[in-house]
Image (cartoon, rainbow over all chains, first blue to last red):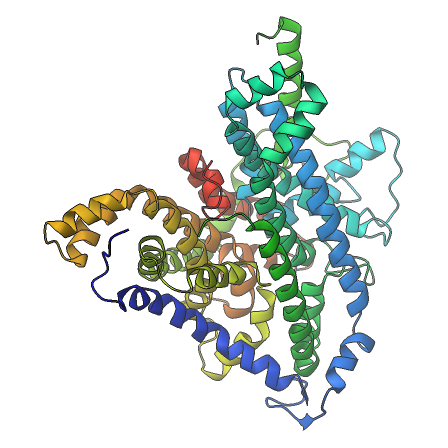
Length: 295
Length: 275
């Protein structure tokens, strides 16, 4: 490529505004959580940090808040959710790749759940899950599946799964549309050649199609796993993390400790831990997803 | 290969089943917004009723407590979209056009911001904004939304600028056109569809964001979904109102996605998958 920049510094000058604005926007929170993570500070007692406590807050994250439960729930949501959404989406993508009339209409309608704000999805499902008169509860009862008095969201055994169902409902179409695009980009010659070689059905899928949609799949898994890992909105509307800590996620635990209990010091320490964890995950993913990427 | 009629029927039946599963919750909620209050929790569910607009009238006209929230949602999302464009355009242009050092670092840094949990910003900003007496300002919401919109737009716009042949600019450079002329006369006009698509996604992103307005807005600046959530705080939840305001909150993103058509996949992967 010939040089089309005016000066050597021009590209960096173009990058500077966005880089600077974003650094400014995140430098304050970073400074805030790092410095306050070593102070005792409850916002209801004082508008400023109260006392230096060293690393005590990091200990309190584990002993005074259900951090371990939240971590387990979060990993469960992210792992199971990504897995189920991927494979259900793949199934739908394969169904859609059968070229019949009406295909584009189906895809246009299928994407609708993805357009909703996650809180709106929460409203939809809270209504559906209602013990008295909820549509989903009614469906379950009418096929003979018992639902307890507290409803699906009110039972410790089913709260987390019910949150997950709402998320799967919203994001499986996302997987389907992405993987459909991935399948579509595989040329007919490749499929034809595989067919000539005798690959059909399951073998065609497993040995030809799946490896070829790998780049798309990697992007989906990365984005979806992180979004699930950060899950907050749905939990806020559906269960508020309950009953007990049954559906509490890391993000909700942080919100609860900081903006409901006003323990800013503990919340700051928790933020440090979560950010370290997320940074680790993102780096692992990026290494995996962008392995063959051209920059 | 041609499908036999019964195979076609099978495919259509499976498509219908898929759509039934993914559309029922939405349609059921629309029905809630339109149905008489008494039928909201009837057992067995009431499928046939005379649709009425009472809930919309109550929430948006008289007394219309949610009407200002609809305006706030429009203001904040539009503001966030407009503010993000110049920043993102400049960066995307630089990343797409120039072989600069650290390109990979910059792109991954922006991407990692997109994947960071938004909740971690909440407490620091809640306290900062109250100290600065900016709590509840539109500006605070629009600014913090940039942590999402700018990285998203940079990635998406870069994918569009990548598709405009660099040879056009090189040819113009040979003819003596300066960088500003090349940018504004050649690349930007050819990227216009991409700019429109990116703006639409930035708008939907901001519109659907609830975490930031939840903490940073006040009674008079709260956005529509936050206002909807307030119905849960009152004793005796009126679900018809929740549904009516939610339907209003659903419509703009739905309309935008219908317009986006073949750009949906690209937008939802920030340009990583062309679709």
